[in-house]
Length: 69
Image (cartoon, rainbow, N blue to C red):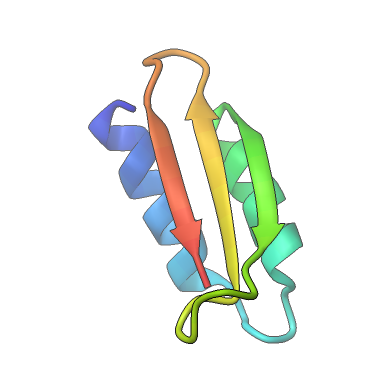
């Protein structure tokens, strides 16, 4: 994923108002505003420090950004 898209996603996540904004809604906003698409958004039960994981694919650069909660 081009560097600019990654920085944009980081800025969106940093500005999110957790827990008022749900992880699902933040993933959707990240995908929409970065011009990408959500590949998956899953609950994680098997790891003590991670509750959710999502991947956003870039439409232009072919890269993937992972989001962890």
